[in-house]
Length: 43
Length: 361
Image (cartoon, rainbow over all chains, first blue to last red; front, side, top):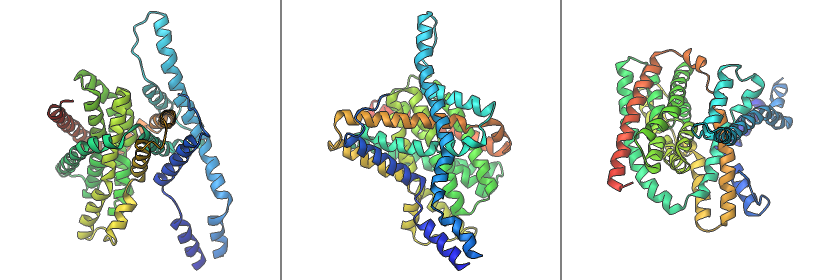
């Protein structure tokens, strides 16, 4: 039972919020645009 | 036995399965959003070719209406629901990327004005909704949830406050349903009122950011008016979102002092936990754009990425709005919300009108 608690705590400690994920994905996209991987995004 | 229970929590396949579960819904968001974009391009051209008088309806409205029609007729099948719920994620990623279109100086200038208006709006809305809740004899914690939802930031604020003040699930469902229903109405009424009053893009953007409670709907209500109004609505709404931690902390302390919620230990940690991180992301991207980290073409590319993210968001706003589900939540919280929202919309319109006279917008 104690193992269960420990595993649960470790998992939740490293769980990122939706907000943080959105920021990380946006930063990654910005970096890909900056480095020229995405040269042109049509609209 | 314990090991048998714990193993599934750390199984490496879980994230992959979770990812696969969201794919159908994201594809539905993309299909509905893109259909909205095609309708904007083709309906206008078709009407023009046939010499019809037809208003130019933006993709924002087409995407929302298509989503609403699906959600309220055939419904959204279970397989799509997890993915459709990611519209909040796309909204936040879109706001961060939108930062590239703001110069830091503009944010500080506009942010300063909007911060004052937001402070007045939050205090006025909290006081008025609390008064209405008492008048209609709603449960005190339900009143708190409705007040926070209408004063700060819709669904996110209600969920954050629910946890902090230990409110019932039923109360938060009532509040979320009332706020979402009223946001859906605001989507269609705000642009009409704005055009009727000949509001400038700046005045309307401020009003949408102050008066519409949920971030997705505030973004859509702004974009429905004009691109410039949409940008400003996002900025003002983000300023409101940044206040969420302070308001939730105040209510958490209040309910803890009454012995009806757990006391808050580390207040700084509490504020950081509740602070919307996408606001920081938005400011960082804006600072990078201001200091020339991105060239002009790259800023254009980031702006278009932000538009694609918002396209998914607007489709999601329509797809997750189900009026019959909302009706089931009861009339009284909705009535309190409706009276409060109309008053807040009038109050914020007067605030913006006053500010536009002072600053000559």
